[in-house]
Each structure stands twice: as C-alpha cells, then as structure tokens.
Image 1 (tube, helix red, strand yellow):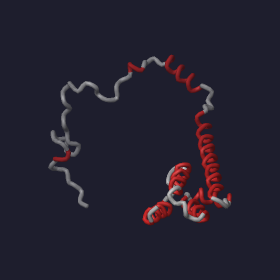
Image 2: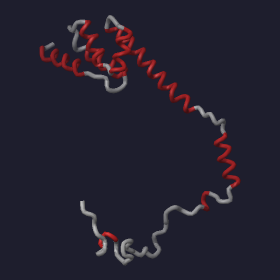
Image 3: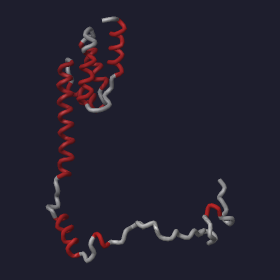
Amino acid sequence: MPVNAERHAYRLVANLKQTGALRDYIWAYQKIMLDVPMMPEKDKLNWFIIGLQSWAQANMERSNPESLEQAYVAAERLADTQHRSYIDTFKSTKESDHDGKRDERRDNRSESSPHKATDRKPLFRKDNNGPPRKVTCWVCGGRHYTRVCPKWVRPTE
C-alpha cells in the first residue's frame, strides 16, 4: 500500500464521527479499519471511542473495553438497548387506552346528528362563476384597494 493511501486512511479514521445510528458508525469504522492494518490496537480502540457521540462515549467508557472487539460488542449491545427502549417508548403510545370509546362516540354522533356530512355549508366558495366582489377601501370606503388609497398614511420607520 502506498504511503499516501495509508495517510489518507489515517485521515479518514481521524475525521470519522458518529452522526447517525450507532450501527452505521460501527460499520463505517470497521470498513476503514480494513485499509489500516498496521495501526496499533490501542490507537484503533481510542479512535473508535473518540468518534462516538458523547452519550455513547460515556457508556463505552463505563464498560471499559480492553480491545477493539470488546468495544464493538459493547457498542452493538448499546445499539440494541437504544433500539429496544425506542420501540418500547412508542409501542406504549400506539396501544389504545380508551377501549374503543372514541369509535363508539363517533358512531353515535353520526347517527344522532340531523346534518349529514354532505349537507354542510362549504367553507370556501366553490363556484367562482358569480359576479366579482366589489372592491372597497377599509380606510375611506372608496372603490379602490387600500394600498392605493390617497388618505392612507404609510407608517415611517
């Protein structure tokens, strides 16, 4: 391997930071390590931990891995724990706690309501074929837009 290629690989290791998922960072780091076989084991471990986000660094230092393989295992375990806690958080919100009462209310409302959904008055005019609205100025009541009103005084800054 040329010297420049090894230097480039070292630069990649130094610039690699975890910005997304932990598993993606582990995969990218392992891929770069294939290009740098001569790096000492301690340096590989330290660069791996330095590239992690702060919360992952704290958990990694708590587990105190002595080799890069132990660090990979600890990081995978951390990713699994993080994924499980994320799923548990949102799994509980997806389960309904109203036991179908909302659906019953919706059914009762539709049965007892004298107006059907199609009988409602539309919020906006749907037919623009009618006569155009008359333009009136809200400052003087004239038949022009307010922006061209001769009586309107523009505020100065």
